[in-house]
Image (cartoon, rainbow, N blue to C red):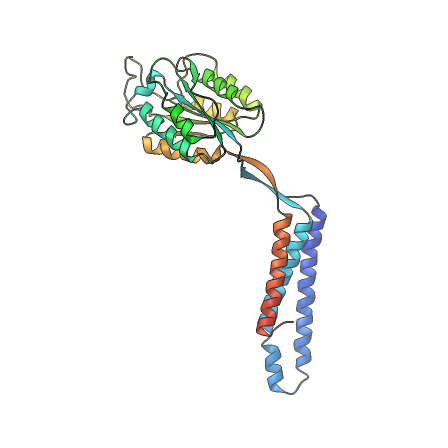
Length: 306
């Protein structure tokens, strides 16, 4: 938390302490004066006020503290949902995505999870899709209509060819607007073997303010081969971590279809959030006023105030 006027916050703390100290001293003097009266009933009535007065003193001191902090104009940096965000989902359609280490195949699991992502994106978010293998192919323009995005997903090609992650990132960045909350979600087995260097592209994209989130799908050491080749179906996690770091995003690996759906559903919310300064002065001031009203009304209601 930061304060536009930190000295005012300090003054609020001191004012709350001073109020509490004054109220406690005044209460003790009142109880001491009560000892001068000979009527036992009156003494008992005054003594019975002590717990209530202590409670009211604490509530009022807190109200003074909150008011002082509010006047200092506090703010925090927090993730805030952006209603006009733009996100591009890049889906690997290379030959390695036909591997069955993720049932029924990596490609089928990715397609199903992509549909989950589209349905989970908040209303107003503009969404685009890029399919990539040896080359990257945008499947449609950015749209805020989930039905259109699902139709675009229906044009996802079957697994075939190499893996050009760098080209996919560049194509996705080219679809995004020049400003605003922008993000790319990359779903791949992460073994790049074609096109531009993905890390260099990711660094350029990250420098422009576009966030990159990577999801690695598959398992290492499964012993399975990429269909039609003699190559092992592996996943390059180090590359995906580096790409995500370059775009100030996160990396996650999933080894089954359910985990992939869960991850993409979560990213549908994460990608449309950006860190912003949130002013707290108004809610704190309202809280201070509410506490003061509650303490006064409650005190009058029980007949123990002031």
